[in-house]
Image (cartoon, rainbow, N blue to C red):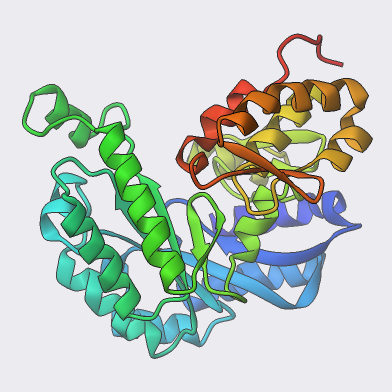
Length: 348
């Protein structure tokens, strides 16, 4: 697999020849199974084939049960300079319900250890868990704050098909996900973290100043990115590509110097809709100037007309030529964006 990843990096370097790599992100699956030597090989291939900024953000996702003291010390000796830890909850009953491999003690212990070796740490928390009271959610947030981590990503619980959680809900063993509960938890989260100096720079991401994830920020601002590995997605501003999701087939294709990926070219309407979706999730919002310059006056008129009612309802507002979601509309931002999608013009 390591050889295949490096081969893909080499084969695709022309796609990024005019770009400077700002971030390297080891995500998806369990990248923490990599040892330092393997991490060095992959990062070395990036530096050998791409232009990299002097101080790149290099993040590795990990689960608490993977982060022993030895593992954390090993990662600290590597080029990794940011950890993203999938805590999800500090309560055992929540972790058990979500079928997580770690327990509550491991959740707390790994952050304490990581803080000794890493300054830039992000943790994930899940809200809207059936049976989670507001009090327990507040306790989760306060535990995270007590560790002094500078970045928190938080998501509403979603129930995926063919999972244990889905089965438990279907059998009536636990209650279904409650959207009103999730919304209440979201507003508690925003209030608590903003009180502590965090900026909600994207709906699901909260960072202290100077600790916004450069990787997340680039994605939500629609910048180009190159995805390497099985199931990885890429985007160059015009086209979107995705790799095959089968490890064996991925490795076999790269051994033959073939790229196992499919590519689609986005229409102007697709790109407009994506910008509306991503822009409204951020503190930077949607630039009306960019809408006009990139998509034309028809799209600008369509957006302004569609936004008027949401502005009147207090869900959107205008500031310095940018359309933004209000605090009242934050939890509903994806639905608001969908209502503003262009659907009446033919794709061009």
